[in-house]
Image 1 (tube, rainbow, N blue to C red):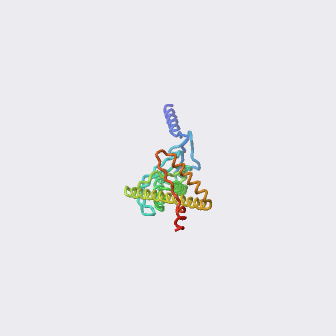
Image 2 (tube, rainbow, N blue to C red; image 1 turned 135 degrees about the vertical axis):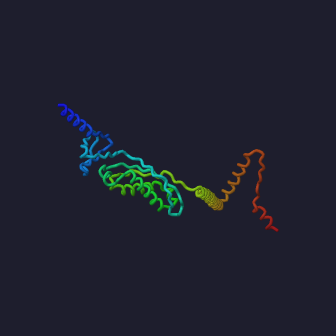
Image 3 (tube, rainbow, N blue to C red; image 1 turned 60 degrees about the vertical axis):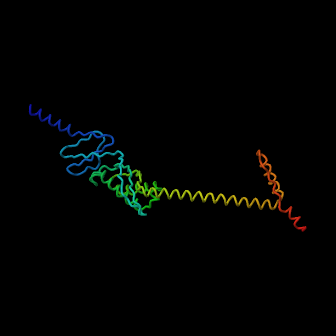
Length: 247
């Protein structure tokens, strides 16, 4: 009876040790005699019959991957450091276990090489102004490359572009020159439009001489509104022409 009790106790301890509990966001990939079972187990209680079975725990939660700064030379030969962040999750635990040794490390390395490849094919102006396009391109390429591993890359965002101080000063001078150019163009366009309107007004007054006289009188009224104002009455040259013709 004593030996039987010991055996029963050992069997109970063995069965208890075979019980594994997995959370809602976890799945167990079971290898039975070296061969993977068709479907992952969990969540909840899973029986792992050691040493016949071996369980590999895989998390299904969204993973935030920080892509470290990469030294990149753009298409127009500008050196820059670019870092990014990628979001992915495991969609197929079996593929993530048997197709790649460490899916998180592999995804990180793939994200770094993809970032260098994509940014290296773009010019600096596009890098600074087309963030959304770059993010979509990175996400599409990275998702396609990691799909055989059972991983879904949901989003990739370029976080920061670090440029040298000399390049920043050059870009600041370029931006200032561009603002001055735009200001001069706007001022020139304003002068052109004003001159065009003045010419149109002159043509209209030429057709109606009384309009010129009324405008003259209106100007005198506006001048007379101010106190201590000296008013000058210009005399048309045509008045003196009559006297010069008599001579």
